[in-house]
Image 1 (cartoon, helix red, strand yellow):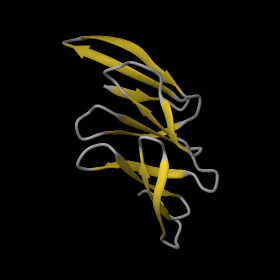
Image 2 (cartoon, one colour):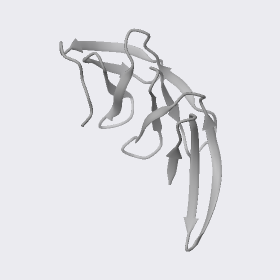
Image 3 (tube, one colour):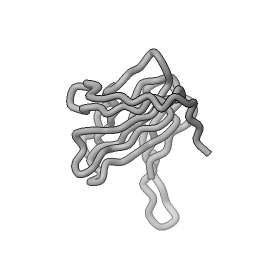
Length: 120
């Protein structure tokens, strides 16, 4: 079970029977608004409330790597485009939908919806 708190820390809980172990995976020092696994579970996207999106590879137990950043508007949500995990789509609060190449964080395409977006 992966879990994040408002302090920006990604935690992993290994649960077996009635016992569990907790492991600190990454500390990005920004509140995390959502966690999204790639379809093959090799990547985990960490979407923050302040704009940046990070990638974490559970099998490698390394640090989270900043993939995307925007100063114009905060990301509301992000997800992988399938098949594979080369691209992701994001939407900002201001209504901008973006397609990103995850290898280097390049924004490939943008579409402005012209409305403010909310999660309900």
